[in-house]
Amino acid sequence: MKMKWRDGLFSAAGLLVFCAFCAAGATMASDVLVGACIYKFDDTFMKGVRRNMVSEMKKLGGELEVADSQNQQPVQDGQVGAFINKGAKALIVNLVNPVDRAVAASLLEKARAANLPIVFLNREPDAEVMKSYDKACYVGTHAEESGRLLGELIVDYFKGHPEADRNGDGKIQYVMLRGGEGQQDAILRTEFSVKAMKDGGFEVEELASETANWDKAQGAERMKGFIASVGLDRIEAVVANNDSMALGAIAALKAEGYNLGDAAKYIPVVGVDATAPALEAMGQGTLLGTVLNDARSQGAAAVRAAFAAAQGRAIDKETVGYEVTDGKYIWIPYMKVTTENFKRLM
Ligand code: GAL
Ligand code: CA
Image (cartoon, rainbow, N blue to C red):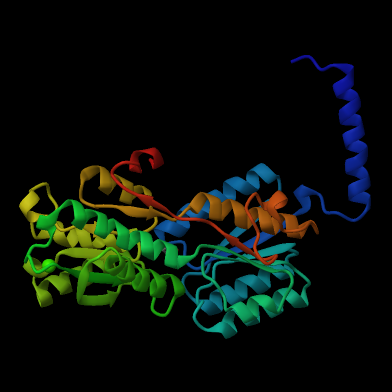
């Protein structure tokens, strides 16, 4: 398109304003290095978050370095120190250990000593720790919401399929696959999924519950264990704290001839995340439903918050694109994913 003189005038004026902005001490986009640590790269959901972080930073024009903390807190501590030493202007941390409040506190002290903003992501630090530093913020979700939606998926199914109550006792006999021990996401998804089944008008009986650390292979192992200990014919539902573990459970069910298309040999399995393999499994009818854990919004919000703060700008709706609560919390909503809407996410 041909440029009019007026446009030229505007861009010249824009350049002037921009230069004044730089002279006032603001950091240019290309000078912003954000250092990020992900608790481990080998986590299907966090892979999606990371991909979105990278693409968001490309749009913003800054530099993002992402480190794999390999599920080891000392490795992560070292990475944060290294980012500070190499001149990062903001930090993003997906904690390896969100359970011990001292861990987040010590990383926050490192950021404070260097006067750097620190954005915690996906694994929420203790509220008191968060309060102690005005340059700390958190991007994540309300886990109880995902728990509620997870339980509702089972309720909706049982309401529409009376035969799902296989022993006809009016109760839902379920097994639970839990995420990382002691982690908020795992505790709340477990608690609130059970509460949602009860709120939905069902009595429930927990046949077994084990942690499988958000992991597919461990999910398959635990499910095999459940099949051996409680018996396949007694299990009426599998509730998993995330999709990876749900898909592990489905692999174990398939090995027993279940969830392969025969209606008489089907056990509803639900998870959280709406990862690509989970949506595929919904298409195949092996996974009943999931809950969208919005990797795109979480990745984008974390990078935008870090980028804005690195340039000395406020973390608010304007800079981040999402509502900011108490000046430091960015909550990304969940969404129920069913056979009606899952294709839209693929
Ligand atoms: C959850 C997610 C899980 C796993 C976990 C790691 O939000 O649903 O799949 O990534 O975070 O803490
Ligand atoms: Ca029953």
